[in-house]
Length: 155
Length: 113
Image (tube, rainbow over all chains, first blue to last red; front, side, top):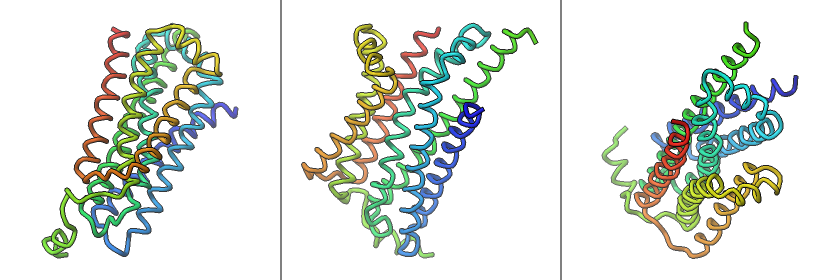
């Protein structure tokens, strides 16, 4: 049962981390003295949530994914593992590092320096796009697992 | 809101960032490329994969190594105090993500088709 909840927690933390990154992007677009503190808080939340997505995903991947992998590879969508999971599990490290970098990127004077604002905008946009790619790949992997199970059980 | 005045007070993209933002932008770029090269190495050289797996799980070892490179180089580059402009730092982030991510995607595509 915990396994199922954990599998839900991973994309939930990822989506919330992405929302926090979008929040940073919007605050950076309108950077002023009034919202810099809020932007830095959102950046820290984005980093924490992506780390939580990493930890929950890592635990599931190491402990349980082997069985899913066998089902996917034997099913009609073996590329859901070969292409999407193999890419996702390593591309995720870039998402983790960029989300970790986000609080550093917004630590400068975002409201006073165009260079810092540019860095804040691109870093938060990068986290957003990478998480979207992770969520999309996760959906394909999940579909590969489902159709593999349907075939296996002959439903 | 008067955006013209705002952009004048904001300065330019070629302003220098602080040492930490610059150092960790470079560290991210190196870690992103290292991550991709480690995928190629462990998938093509079996003893490397076995060694990484023997330390627990190859993916966990992989992640720890990438994080060590990121934080290690981040501390090192920050200490060097070589500041980047905003444009340079963003270029490091974008190009390393495209190249590092592209290598991983194309490698897996090659092995899938």
